[in-house]
Image (tube, rainbow, N blue to C red; front, side, top):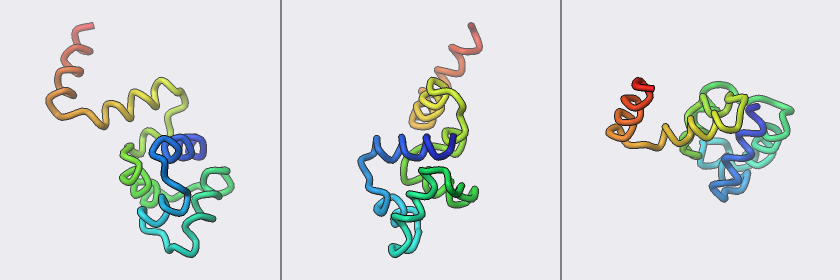
Amino acid sequence: MVAARLREARTVTGLSQRELGVRAGLDPSVASPRINQYERGKHTPDTSTLAKLGEVLDVPIAYFFANDDDLATLIATFHRLSLVKRRRLMALLQHT
């Protein structure tokens, strides 16, 4: 799941593999190959690296582990909501 979600989020933002890696704090000389390995599933980033990648991509760590596309979209959308909108949504959900 992590590999596919990482590729999807990076593609949506329009970042190259190198640019994503550099913005997440990877050494520029290894940024592109490392992100490529993550996206192919050859290696999985550790939690700290995944958190940094998520910050750059504006998605929480949970997004990378969602096993359903709708759930991944919901997680990313909720993450981007203001606190007021989150509370409204939570109130609405509690009444259903």
